[in-house]
Amino acid sequence: MRKPGIIVLLLAAVLPVAAQRQDFLGRGELVLCGGGMSYIGDLNNQSAFGMPRLGFGVGLRERLDNRWSLRLNASVGSVGCDHDYLELRNLSFRSDVYELSAVAEFNFRPYGPGGTESQWTPYLFGGIGVFRFNPMASYTNSEGAVEWVELQPLCTEGQGTQAYPERRQYSRLQLCMPFGMGVRFRLGKSVSVAAEYGFRKTWTDYLDDVSTTYVGAELLGSAVADGDMAARMADRSGEVVAGYVNAPGIKRGDDSLDDWYSFFNLSIGFSLETLFGWMRNTRCEM
Image 1 (tube, rainbow, N blue to C red):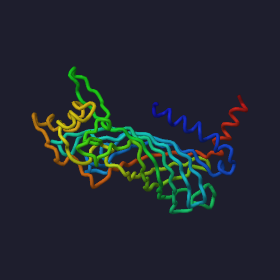
Image 2: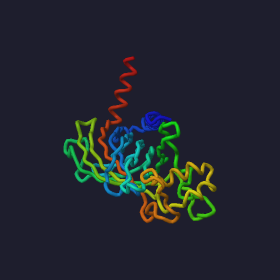
Image 3: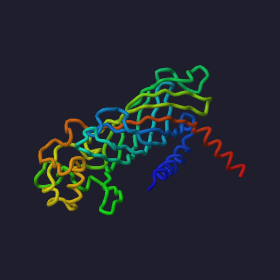
Image 4: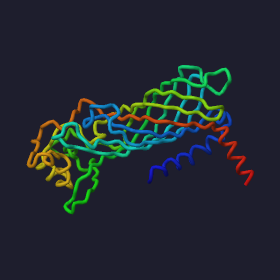
């Protein structure tokens, strides 16, 4: 399914339900956002916002009072690393990321549509979420064409093999903990804008399919279904130095730290009460 299709399905599912709660309409906002996503892990430990890629999303916010609000988000985007900071290792990846999260927001200033409340405020947010990822890497086939291959099924670090029973094949569906800060401004009673920067702490070290040590082409060739491709994608040093091979046990990644990703976005929020009022008026005119 294409990314915009996920956004449309989410809106179709939640907006009719929200419309049934008149009290929610008065406190609710539809939030649309877009910006950049970035990855922090074994292939990029140099920059907190290196090699950003596009990301966007949609959310529903309910204002509980002038200090606190709750927000449900659906975000889609991609992360990746084209240039390994260890040149000889020469690994790379990209992955689409699909995230659902629920966060609480705290305003530093009393904020709201009322005339006595501030029309702008910095804020903090934090919550819990779930995300799906699928690391892939490119290679040039025998005909000279570039192809992309999914890395998780290849078990590039010996996951699930008898030689490494402690290494289980990782799940591509994981929990994350979003947190960060932003600043928002109210443009009248019906529209607000915001800029936000947040991190996602994850509990996986395989967002980039890199975590621990090399296991060797011989093992992968005999223990994995597509052994030749697994060996090729597991150790790409030979593409930099012809004939170079990393022996089993040599460090491939750092399994003491899990991977992270971050999201910087600009958003615009629309009052649900105003939005549904406009939709009703449009239907009546038709």
